[in-house]
Image 1 (cartoon, rainbow, N blue to C red):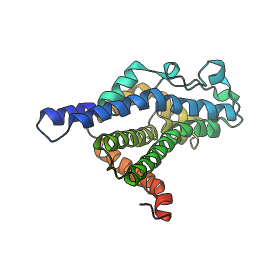
Image 2 (cartoon, rainbow, N blue to C red):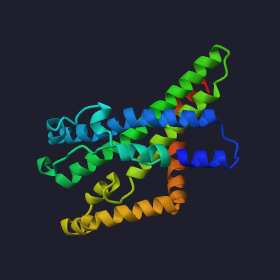
Image 3 (cartoon, rainbow, N blue to C red):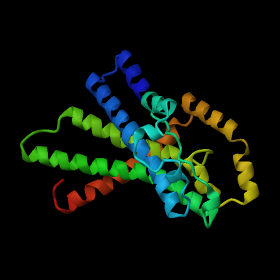
Image 4 (cartoon, rainbow, N blue to C red):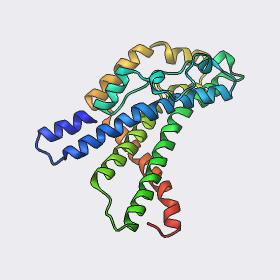
Length: 233
C-alpha cells in the first residue's frame, strides 16, 4: 500500500503527498479501530455460540492495545495486508464445533465489510452536507474515505482466502471430514510461507484485485441505494 505509493511518487508518477498522508491516516485508523473490531467480532460470535474463552482472557474488548500486533500493523501500513493478535477460541465449548468455528471465523471479515459500508454511507452523507452548503468535497476527504473503504474490503477478501490460518480456511473446515481437516492444517506453517511469497511476488495481485473490485462495487452499490431511492445522488 504505502510502499506502492512511495514507489510511484519517486518514479515520477502523478501522486500527491496529500493522498499518501490520507492513506497513512486511514490505515492507522483501521489498525487502531477496525482490527480490534475484527477480533472483537470473532470473540463476540464465539461467546454467542457458547465459548467464553475470549472474555476470560480479557480479549472481548475494543481496546486496540489488546489486539495490536506490531508486525501485522507494520505490514498493513507498508503492504496493504496485515493482521491483529487473534482472540483465543476453544472449539470444545461449541455444541457443533465445525459449524460454530466457521461462523466465528466468518464474523471477522463480515465486520470489515460492515465497516467499509458504514464508511461509504458516511462519505455520501458528508458529500451531501457539503453540497448543500455550496462546498465541493475536498480531495483529502475523498482520499481518506477511498483508502479506508478499500483497506477494509481488501482485509475482508484476504481473510476469506481458504488458506490456513486465515478465516476462510476455518469456514472451509466446516465442510471437511476430521481426517481431511487434519491434512489441511498439517502443513500450515509451510502454506503461510508460500502465501507470503506469492503475495510479495505479485502472483496473487491480479486475482485478489478482481475479487476486491467485485466486493467494492457491491459495497458502494448498497451504500448508494438509499440515496438514489430518494433522488439525492
